[in-house]
Amino acid sequence: MSAAHPLGDLRLKRYPMFMCLQNRPCLVVGAGKVALRKAESLLESGAQLTIIAPELDSDLANTLKQYPNQAAWQQREFQDTDIAGHYLIIAATNNRAVNAHIAELANQRQIPVNVVDNQAACSFIVPSVVDRSPVMIAVSTGGASPVLARQLRMKLETMIPSSCGQLAAITEEYRDQVKQRFAEPEQRKQFWEQTLRGPFAELVYAGNVSAARQMLDEMLAKQSSETTIGEVYLVGAGPGDPDLLTFRAVRLMQQADVIVYDRLVAKSILEMASQTAERIYVGKEKAKHAVPQESINALLVRLAKQGKRVLRLKGGDPFIFGRGGEEIETLAENGVPFQVVPGITAASGCASYAGIPLTHRDYAQSCTFATGHLKNGTIDLDWEKLAQPRQTVVFYMGLTGIEVISRELIKHGTPSDMPAALIEQGTTRNQRVHIGTLATLPELVKQRSVRAPTLTIVGEVVKLHEKLHWYQPERHVAASEFSRNPEPQE
Ligand code: SAH
Image (cartoon, rainbow, N blue to C red; front, side, top):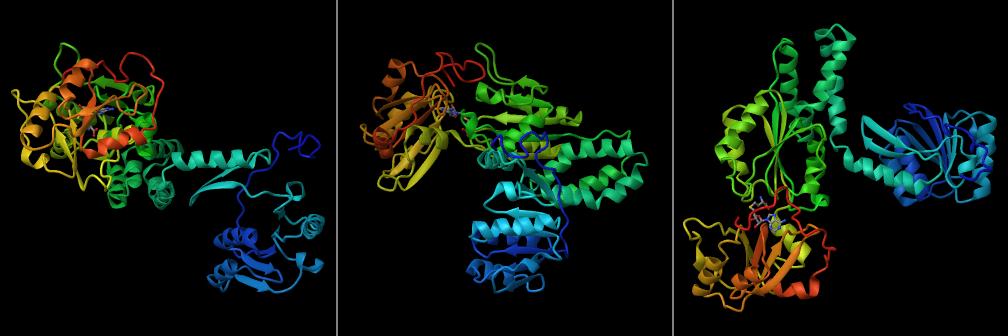
């Protein structure tokens, strides 16, 4: 806004309000694409809409048909007398002078008016909105930067769950009941504060509305002294780059009371969790052993039973070589509510960031995810099947077993010069991609001192790396991006 603008010195450039237009006569002058957008929201707000224009845009005609009792088109030019009797007017013709004239007339009669091509003539502006009806968030920069308003709106769009409106609607249904249950306004406020932050809201966000209602019913039936059980969120943190987290993962990380994580969670991801959350590390440390799986399962149950919102954060996707299934089995057996948030698994993340399309159709018809975990010096896999041509095989945890993988595949018929890649700390700033062949893999690991976490990809698709690699991070630090320097052995 220029300094000369009459609104320039006001602290509040616009008075924010939400107007009820149900059954109120409103006028849109003009019937092109811009008028269409305005007409649509007026109609959705229940306005009685008159449109004045010599010609009607075909999309607008279709919209009007959907509201036969609410909308009328008068096929003619605007006349000064059209102003009367309207609560709100939008000047959206393609003629700037006509629009300015309409604004002047409306202002004389003190009718709110918006002019689509002339900020200064508007008595009100239509903000960028995040629509989660009945929840609405309006963004305005007071005309200073419509692009900034749009960017802020997009940010809010991504932060606010899409079912936030549904949450508000259910809350409204229960308002009277809550009023009866809690006589004091302060008690009611406390009840809602807890409820809207806790598992009830998460159930709604996860789409399980009937369970959410049931939970609310139970909460209302309970005596206040009874403690509520917490919840466990089993969340996939993706392979390392924090940008690859899901919106849901971020939201839950910010509201959890406790975060239980292991070595596969990148440091930069952990930093995004709520600063007040307690953190419990259950991964392997150099000489020590990892916390046994049963103890982790029991820990999750214990924390949830203390009423805490527990976030179990796992690298990649919790259901892919993550033992996430076992953890929630124990929760289910103990009646602890939980939800699972998928993450980008290492195979997808590393392959994308290394420019290796896992199923490029010139080279592969299928892709197998296998574990290369060594048990008593061997890997128990169907080598015959994995050695079949025209497929890609991805090995998780394949570093210590790399010699076995190389030897067994060659023994079962994979050509020893089959292209193969090792992707170390994939998707992080420390990503390194080592390309070789099935036969050279073990040597490559030694030569380059490749460390965990590393993913192994075997197949013709690896050839594409040369042409398609795009991610070239500036190597950050010599140290690992992962929460504890993981052992070379996985
Ligand atoms: N649940 C995880 C996998 C756990 S198994 C997922 O879905 O990704 C652990 C193995 O995953 C590691 O040994 C390694 O092979 C692979 N891995 C996980 N993150 C990785 C990363 N950022 N770069 C390379 N490999 C990774």
